[in-house]
Length: 172
Length: 172
Image 1 (tube, rainbow over the protein chains, first blue to last red):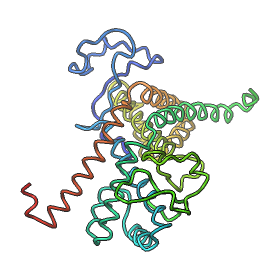
Image 2 (image 1 turned 180 degrees about the horizontal axis):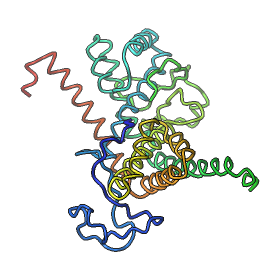
Image 3 (image 1 turned 90 degrees about the vertical axis):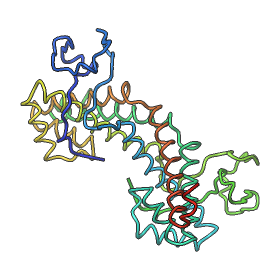
Image 4 (image 1 turned 30 degrees about the vertical axis):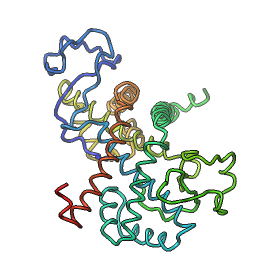
């Protein structure tokens, strides 16, 4: 995940900021193409996220999940092989030791070209990641957990800060 | 994202593997606790993913998304500040240059303790990441794009391999 925001360029004010008394109609620098049919109520449109070019935050997150699913598939297949095919398990472990799983597709492509046995393993990993993301991965649960995590983290960060700066408040 | 599967231990055969003629009833090593009320039809339960302990793949993915949302919030806030508060923008950029965004909560915690102005920035970033994940991020789109990505990647990987190993087949 990128950690630099140095290339930020475009700007847009959010509708979800009650703390700042922003009125869109008095900000002439807002991009006009994005203001078509702009009503006056809050939550009228989404916050603009700069720096993604033609892609989207969803596509970037999906790409990360894509690699994650490959990682999961490797774990699933490894565990299966460990029991009933120790030889293939050893081959997979040996290949894992030499190749990074950070790029799932690159990993699979390299494995397909290693040997015919490795090719079978790669096809199996690809099949498992497909089945996993369609059938097993709990997408609703992901959303629920992620939103809960943001809420709880925000609360915890503020609570920790308050307890550090005004110790008396920790009794509450 | 972890790239090692060396700690894999538990095993379970998937129900989604038609390629392997696996019959659960003849595999005595399957963990009995997981086979309660095991019907004979396919897709009867999920593939077991080892190595997550008390957590789950969904929780791990949510943690990654959590940091991603902080990164997105920093981009959004930076773009806003760049236009109407260059001084705060410079402060944010300077702080970004000194602190990693890989751990979003650590980033926010550090920023809250930097100065009172930085604290306001941190609170704003926290507010934006909360609003973003609840209102703006397109969860359905994430699922759609991720599943499409796995399908297309699998097809592409197999097509590339075939075109490399049997050039005649590329005409199809």
